[in-house]
Amino acid sequence: MELLVVTDDTVPDPFANLLAALPDLPWRVTRKKASELLLEQGLQFSEEDAWLYFPETAPGLPQPAPVIINRVVELSDHTRAALGGGRSHPTRGQVTHALTHVLSRYPRVIGSPGVCSPVGHLVPLVNQWRMLEARRPGLATPRFKYGYGPEPIDPAPFTRPIWKSPFDFYAWKVSDAPPETHWDSFVVDRPEGVPVLASFLGDATRLTPLGTEGTIPDTARQELRALVPLVREVFGAVMGECLLFLAGETLTFASFSHHLSASARQPYFRELMLEGLTSELSRAVVARA
Image (tube, rainbow, N blue to C red):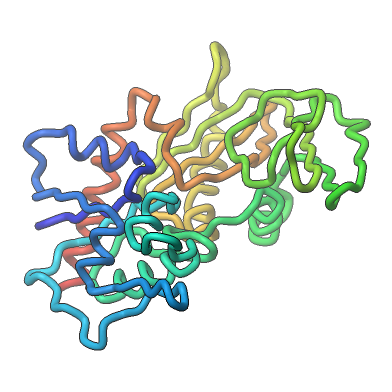
């Protein structure tokens, strides 16, 4: 079985880097930049109207077609420039649309584009919390305040305020003041408890308390494992990572990200990725049968 891992031209991806570094895998693994994949399919950018055009007749796919693993977690300016002209480049929305169209031609894709994202759904923190709360009533999420434009907001009575962007899924250190440069004001009350990282690929999941101390009680561990399939479904994610806070028996969902930057630093990363990938590729074989 051939696997084609597609990544952004410059944004690093721990999963793609892991596969490239592993010898003797049971699959033939190749890697391709997003711009290369699109240009091979005959896409052309017109500087006259700043638009990406598809060819009248699409080139044929290699036979047998590889299983595509889409790891274009975000689109960089380098990818846009590689597809553009000398003075202008396609927008990220155009590139995402083109990538969605090209990937739809392949019979098996692991990691499909979604809402506002070239892989899965990209939504800000408040939307993440509301989407999961709607599917899991009673799920604890952080308290927050949001101010539009110049509207001032008072973080009181938050005990551990964090000023951040609604699209900042990783910064959870307490900060006393908003950043100097920002559009809207957004402050979150850091949840109490031990931060827990939930990493997954397919059905494979690992749960890790972050910090020098802290364990996950069996009841909380069961709740976390039950939550991961819902996260996969809600955010259209084959793989990703979540941050939660555990205080006693209470779990608070903080954030989800398609990036794997925190998981890649864990000792289980290789084992988790290979376990999950094997199960996903087994599904690919069944789907083709």
